[in-house]
Image (cartoon, rainbow, N blue to C red; front, side, top):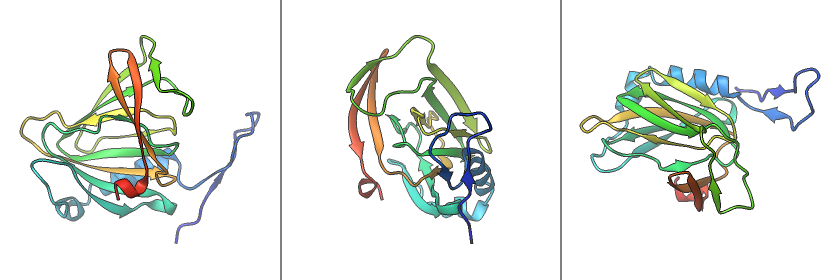
Length: 183
């Protein structure tokens, strides 16, 4: 049985809302351990045309997903509605493009991004990364022939996802999705 953990601000830090549940580091540990479960990874049906997924039980009330990525597929730019999380690659390789900038969550439709905010990361099998609650990124399987499989975990469970389009330095909010649209 998992018990929520209360995490307080460090001594001398400005007080903020208390956080219950797993930290990004704990989610990263979970996804890294999960990608080594060969039977679980093999249980995911792979589709040559579109991504497939299975919902998993994440630690301490988190939401987790096992996701299959056919060659050439990706997520498009999105955020996780204020949840923090982690993901790791079980097989194949994934590329993540992200923004090293905290975007406002409300009150805008179009933003011009400053130079130098783009980050790129490649995650081969067994590699993972954690991210904070303001993370905006896109993830892709750039292989022309191999599926990739990954495990993702979020806390709190995703309340929504904002989807964005990007043209050059311009990021545009396109859609807000609720959990019932992807579950």
